Image 1 (cartoon, rainbow, N blue to C red):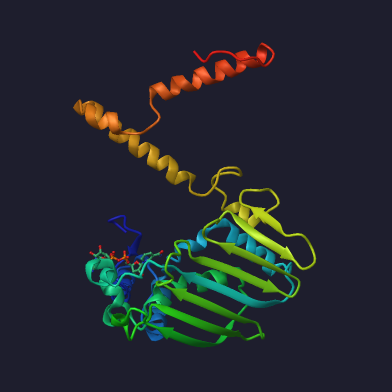
Image 2: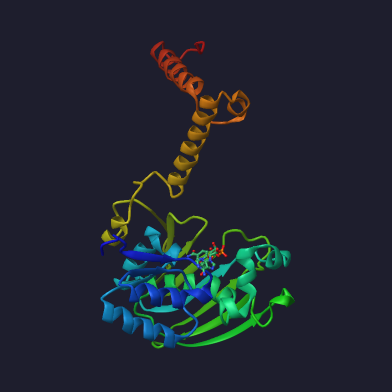
Length: 311
Ligand SMILES: NC(=O)c1ccc[n+]([C@@H]2O[C@H](COP(=O)([O-])OP(=O)(O)OC[C@H]3O[C@@H](n4cnc5c(N)ncnc54)[C@H](O)[C@@H]3O)[C@@H](O)[C@H]2O)c1
């Protein structure tokens, strides 16, 4: 395209996804769209046809599915390490919707509890579509056949939408599953759990420690598999960006640090000593402290492990 635009990323409230996706495809652009995609399957089929005609793709931002260890789980499931998959146990249940005030005060929450804007479901769409996709990623051969869902609005004003739901699942090959999704699971701040149970072994992952997968073979000691290690499947290693030892979240830590450096530089430029005094970041003094530390330790060791002054 002459304007250089190749794709559109749609991050509006749910009820706008369909029209925006359609318009972008008609304009000859690839689409990245937030979940849940649209309200009706027919809309999805129509968009599929349009995308094919236009030779474009539509991607959905199930954002938690990029964790490397989920690829590892998929590799282990598809290579038969677990035996036949019998149970798929899923949970995305946090407590951030406990306060009904949020439904009124927060713009981002107001549309989420309005059926015209969010669709037929609240947490089933907002939360569990993520975990459901992640289970499809891990177990690509499991085809869902039936569900039995019980849903509640513990914050009554959300009715007929739900803020809590339990779903039982039946798969075509006889496997079964369950999903708990909730935003009124008071006190739970890390909320996604996935357990895949096979006839020989199980895998378990949760979002509080995304760098590890628990691998449990019946009758054997449990193994903890770590991100970034050579023993992982090639598909998992392909996603590695930090290297073993460095844990997920390190990039955000660096980013926070650079943010503080920028504020400090700006304060210095403006002669704002008050801001500089209150800003906590590793500065020249801390750098010099590091040199003193190394030299004192080395001197102590070289003298035969004796006490030396840090200077
Ligand atoms: N993938 C994820 O992990 C994830 C996380 C949060 C939200 N979401 C999804 O992202 C979407 C937005 O959620 P949110 O929490 O950011 O909501 P939000 O209400 O905080 O933000 C929505 C944004 O859309 C803008 N907007 C509204 N109408 C518009 C229009 N007609 N044209 C252009 N912009 C418009 C609003 O001004 C606002 O900036 C939802 O579909 C939600 O399900 C996905």
